Amino acid sequence: MNSKILKNKREKLDELMSQRNYDAAYNLYQELHSELTQESAELDSQPALEKDTLRYMAQVFAAIVIECHLKDKISQAIAELAPWQHLSYSALLQARLLWLADRKLETWQKLESDFQVSATPDGNGINIPQNSILRKCDDFTQELVLNLLGHIYKFYCLPEAAAQCCRLASEVVEYLPAKRVEYSNYLFDSHYSFLSPQEYFQRHIGFDALFADIKPFNHSKDRHGHEKLRIGYISSDFRLHVVLLFIWAMLTKYNRDEFEVYCFSNGREDQYSQYIQEHTDFWCNIHGMAPQAAAQVIYNNEIDILVDFGGHSENNCLPVLAYKPAPVQVCGIGYFATTGLKAVDYFLTDTYLVNDNTAKYFVEDLLVLPHSHFCYVPVKEKPQPQPAPCLENGYITFGSFNNLTKVNDTVLAVWGEIMRQVPDSRLILKGSLFYDEAGRALFTEKIKNIMGLSEESFQLRGFSGDYLTEYYEMDIALDTFPYPGGGTTCDALYMGVPVITYGDGSHGGNFGVSLLANIGLQDCCAFTAEDYVAKAVLFASDYELLNALHLGLRNMMQQSPVMDQKLYMTELEQGYKEIWQKWLQQH
Image (cartoon, rainbow, N blue to C red; front, side, top):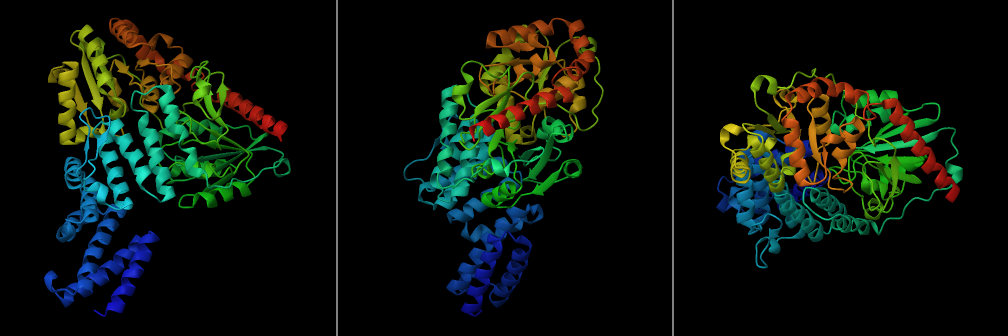
């Protein structure tokens, strides 16, 4: 093939990949691959440029398979990379293909072997020798390796190792948007570990420095003299997602005489998105926009108060808020600690989550609601509660359907003590880890060694979307710590299952306390490990009480501030008015 033609086609392929036009890139890849392979079937006889192009195309094809989740092409992509698997980028792509194929243990083994890295023996860090292959890679490859390792460590319940991978990825990569994403991942994963409030805070305040080059929008009163207060909501989760259960009232029950609601969606859409679009005042999907462009859209709509629901969660919008597209900006609901971003003015919270020390761990001022900071609204019909299973079984079944990364060794040890004090008790856990053979074996050994349970005493079930009826088999739900449950706790309570929670006094750690206290279940709230054990054992001793709770908890919840949409919106909108008046007075 003429070298000039070959060069032009490679440049076009590069352009299509950078534009994420994967369909067109795949078509061009197939055309070029066919032309090269027809000219010579033997790789060794290819001219140097054509051999390099075959290497390049194998990598491009693998990238397309990964980005488009073409699972039926995984084996082909791995095979085409084989002649170049000694190259670091090819080895990385093979690892990513293994991950896409759900061959997670192989992914773990390949990355640690090929790049000479490993988690520390205690699982709280990552070991990268000075002469390791990883350190010799370019920053782009290093970031991708560390990012994938972070996912692996998190999946296999090594959250601090995962967090440190993300921190290192943020340090090595030069591309600023990627640096910000990795730092957000680092902060989010930090919440699975036992850290002091000061350590959480110190990690978060480093985030703001990544936006030092940004020039924020200016705001004046003459741009904000609308008849109604304009509230902008920005989120990746205006769809069937756990966050939607906590923001539904905001989007459907607001006071239309005094407020207008503008929605800026940064993600996929479904029928719930469509409903929100039809029942609010403005809708714009900003997904795929550069943060500055998205901020310009918000600024042009003269939003008074912009509320972010994501914090540092996946696909978050904090880079948009960094441009200060609204004069008053608030974060809450989907995150549980300071954003660390000084462009955010307030953090939404409630009286049960704050104490005299809370404010010093936030760069934001606290917008404290007098009851619950969220309102739980089941947007889909849910099964009716049933009697406590202990009445028929004759023994207590504990359980947790929380993300298994939250189920650390300390939690398992405390749960083990509870079960030792409740004879013949059982345990049910659910999580996607249990579909993975290695993950299931790892967790089984943990439960045996840390909790001291025999295999007939516990069940490990894979995650499933229709899991609510499995609460019929659980008498008492055990919350995790230091990262408590959110949507899963609400689901358990709504299905009639009492939850024992452990509030550690931190803002995020007290989420379960706020939820239970608002419902009237303060007796389920513990503040030490010993108290947590004692309360679980006490509830387990009273079958009649458990049955009454199973049959009555949903009604208690429905009558509480946690599900009182009118009360919640009255308190929230009063909060909006107060912070808006404060801004007007200051300007």
